[in-house]
Image (tube, rainbow, N blue to C red; front, top):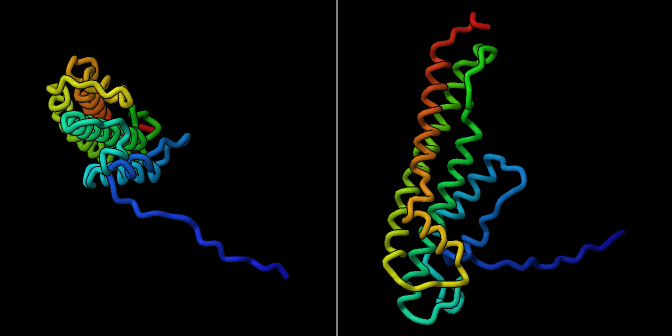
Length: 189
C-alpha cells in the first residue's frame, strides 16, 4: 500500500496589473476558451492597481518614468486584448460563403454574428490603445526594458500600426459574406 503525503502547493494571490499581464500567454493551438481566458487576464490587468515601481516590468527611477510606464502598459494591454478579440472573431468568421454550406445557412449567420461582435469589441480597445499611446508620446522619456511598447506607441502615432483599418476591412468582408449567406437557399446545394 502506497502512502501519499499531502504536500501543500505553493500559490500566491494575484493583486497587481503586472501579475495578471504575466499570466497572459499564447497557446500553440488557439482554442476559443484559451483566448477568452487571456482576455479575462488582460482585462483584469486593466482594472488592477500597479505594483510598487521597484517591481515594475521596467526600471523606474522617477515619477515621470512611472507615468510613462503606466501609459505604455495600458496601451500595450489594450493592444493585446484587441489582438485576442480579433483572433477570437476569426474562429467564427467564415471568410467566404460556399454554395455547399447552404444547408447550414442559419448556423453560419449566427457564427458571423459572433465574429462581428468580437471585431466590434476589438475596435473599442483600439481606440483605448490610441488614447494611451497619445499620452505616452507626449512624454520624452525612453524606457529601454519595454522597448517593444515604445515601438508600438511610435508606430501608432506614426500611422504604421492601424488596427482600425484592419478591423474595418474585416467587418466589410464579413458583411459581404453575410449578404452571400442571406442570398442562399437550401436548394442551392
